[in-house]
Length: 137
Length: 378
Image (cartoon, rainbow over all chains, first blue to last red; front, side, top):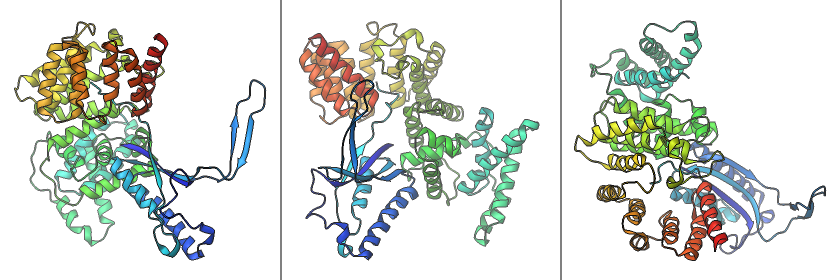
């Protein structure tokens, strides 16, 4: 059993989907509704299969913060709304195999967009580091 | 829940299932009976605790079935008129385990169902051990029960599948308040006491011989201590003695299998006062045996470490270089062998590569320390 992070990006090194994406604010209300409903359904599906660990969305706006020495307030940079790579949100699932994690990510990527067509956005799949096994010899 | 109560849980479930009760419904009824025992036994433990649990679980089952529709009537009749089954209760553990480890289940589902139905752990405890929400674990268990329920179930399935699941539970180790390694040993011990397959004994011996080193395997802060550097005075001598005795009795049956072979390797390590005094030629022979029994490429990698002790690091490196580059821990073994061969720069490079590819943070940190140690020394 390994936990995997299925990460949704706003943009990244990969173009977000083949051919790019029309921004959601330009979809019809019905298309937006269908997309949102799919996202909830994906979460429910992971729950029903006994795989669900967590699902969260992130605010698009973030601030960089760092230590600046004893007694000094933290240094901040930003907030930035537009960065090169923005994490939109994630699912965390606990599954038996990498194959199943990929299948789950592909399913998440099939969310409907304009015209009800799957948007085929890229989902980044990252395994969690686990506890070491007992038997190693 | 107390140990004796948890020991009774699979026996009670076994009685209900043998009488023909639906597995999923019976499992729920046993859980309810256990909860009632926890509530009522402090005022006085019944003379025959098992009979008490069977009676209460049976009543819960009938209650549950009465409240359902006519669809259930057939099962109710079956339950009230038990088929003449085997009188021996000893078979129940294997019977239940092989149902919980049904090949139609994924390993994660089989593990969860085994820990609950045979181990008597609560859903919350199992969820905590695997660090998933309780609702997720409840769903995983009920889904697993749906998959294995429905068919009459009187004969045990393939014991290999059961042993594999118990091995996986053991290997999950210790992740919180539930000691999964200890739980795996308890279940395997239960199975071994009712089943004379030497591979069951082999698996039990393997678990004991590894569990005996548990306190020495990590530092107080969780860092990995390699076998060669472990304080062997902290190994559990009594547990090693027990493991060796179980293994010897199994080997005497002359039906060798993978678990007995792995246990033999662990026993030779446990038997050695130091790494240098380890009987490496015999370990190498057991690895050759293991390679014949298993096509797992990890065996070839571990064998290379023993080969290095017998024939030197160059011979072992030649073997490692012939293995699939994507094999987990290949770079870590290669780094160790390069260091043994005196190629410190190459060893340091490989430790860094291995750390990047480590599947868990304890190993990653260990490998990073090795790289840093070599860099500081050169």
